[in-house]
Amino acid sequence: MLGVSELLSKVRGLRVGAILNPTSVTPRLEHMADVLHGVPGVHLVHLFGPEHGIRGDVQYLEEVGEARDARTGVPEHSLYGKDFASLTPRDEHLQDLDALLFDVQDVGSRYYTYLATMGLAMQAAARRKLRFLVLDRPNPIGGNSVEGGVVHPGYESFVGLWPVCARHGLTAGEYAGFVNQGIGADLHVVRMEGWRRDMSFDDTRLPWVIPSPNMPTVETALVYPGMCLLEGTNLSEGRGTTLPFLLFGAPWLDGQRLAEDLGREAIEGARFRPCAFTPTWDKHKGQRCQGVQIHLGYGRGLNAVRLGVAAVVHGRAQDPAKFRWRTEKYEFVEDKPAIDLLTGSDAFRKRVEQGATVAQLCDSWESERQQFLQERERFLLYA
Image 1: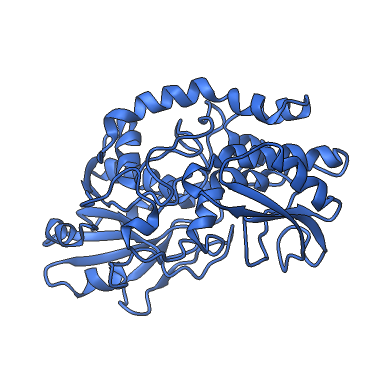
Image 2 (image 1 turned 90 degrees about the vertical axis):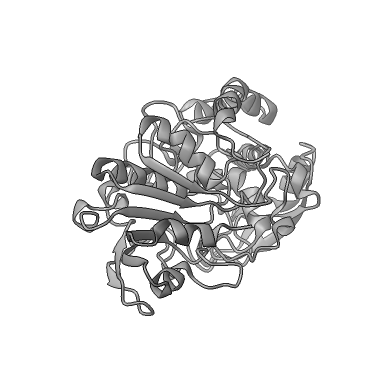
């Protein structure tokens, strides 16, 4: 399914910089850094590590350092540091290259930062007139479902640099084509063979390699386009537990009431069980939280964004005085609440505070969702 052989033929004879992480493996679980380094005629000059690093040993929101890859000896450069400028490859690391390669498994949600890294690297490649190659991989939560709203001007950040829906339904290669409208990079997408938009990740028979420390399973990826909204609140999204994004809660919540309120939303494919958990780190570290566990039945039919909206609305409703929006610095932005960056404007936050229902909040994104569906159509590469 993956076009590894085609990729190697395209980079033979070139000086290559590769943006990789732990998911950059062949179906035989060979890491692409090792593959590129071992192929005669391919000159792997630099490695670039996005958030969490090339081998995946860096935690959420932690800086990725400069190093030398232990297995290949190739210099590693960070694409996730102290400020927004650190997210783009530096000119001194590009001047001896002919091409930049991006090979990272995305999870199908705009907030997930890897495709933002790809877009920023495409801009750098365009400035240096480098070839930019994408080894395409499946969208693990499917290519047909599009959910939520887009980023509005003035709310761009690392969790949303382009006007793309929260759940975009694109592969990395299709996403690259969409954002390249305004970049103009020399883009080459190495397509997959046999992937269809309606495939689940299990259908691909590819190995699931954890793409970041809090994305352990495909089930996590399925709920992430909605449950990541909790990062913009003081509700725990389950970081510090074995089920991030599938558990959520707070010390002051009533889990039974929360499960019942969520159940009345009739979210297809999801059921809710009251539970308690104690995060080992992040929000409410060491405190007993009451909340729910999300149990997925039919994942293909899940509207993940509606799920996340319901979690915010009903979690807040239990005690608006104890609930709060995150105002601390988030993904290098200090002057806007994290929830505004995640949802793409301040409209969601204001409507929640005004008492809007889950249905009303989701319906408010429908016109921009429809517009995005039309705009993305000409960049789709797979049936």
